Structure formats: structure tokens, C-alpha cells
Image 1: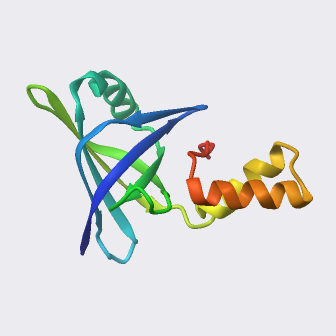
Image 2: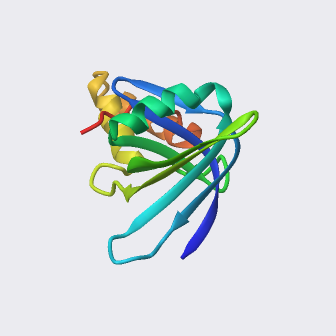
Length: 143
């Protein structure tokens, strides 16, 4: 098992993306036969109802995680909330899921996004290079 610092976390809920303000976070690669990952977000109590609704409905979620430091490429995970704990001023949300390799490469998602905006040729290449450096968030649709 390998553990990493969870630097940032965004939850894709339908067409919206919810940035989860992390007080602290951890991500674990269980390195098991199913390639399972655990992500724990220790965040603000104000998000409890949002996560409680998703947990109660046992819905799948796509989450975008940046691991260790801001400059790292975001990774996308197909997850479910397996635990939700309430503390005095914070909550702990535990996600279990799998890395989305088939469509999760940031460069592919970015290129697709830019092409959908109608960019092509030199303009596409220029914008792609700029965005690969700045790593803006990209909307990912739930399956």
C-alpha cells in the first residue's frame, strides 16, 4: 500500500464541479488485485448535507484529485462514498474507487475540450501548450 498527500479535490456532480476545501487529505493506493484507491477528505462541516445526500443515494462520483503538490497533473477517479463522519467543525469523507485510465489523461481531456471549442491548427497547438502549463480544471461528465 502506498499513501500520498491529497493536495486538492473536486467532486463532479452532474454538470457541476464542487471544489472541496481541504483542511487535510490523504490518498491511498491499496495495490490490491482490484486496483482500489481510498481518498479521505477532511473538510468543512458546511458540506455535510451535500455529501450525506450522495452517500444516502449510494451514487457513483467522479472526483478530480491533485496528489502531493499543485503542479501535478490531476487524476480522475470513479468513486463511491463509503464513510461520512461528522466532527465539531469538520467532516471526514472517505471515497473508495478506481483510477479512470481510459479517459482520465489530462492531456486527452484538455485536447478534447479545446477541440469542442472549435480550435484547430496553430491556434489549437498554442492554446494546448499554454493550458498544459497552467493546468486549468476541466469538466468531466459522469458516465
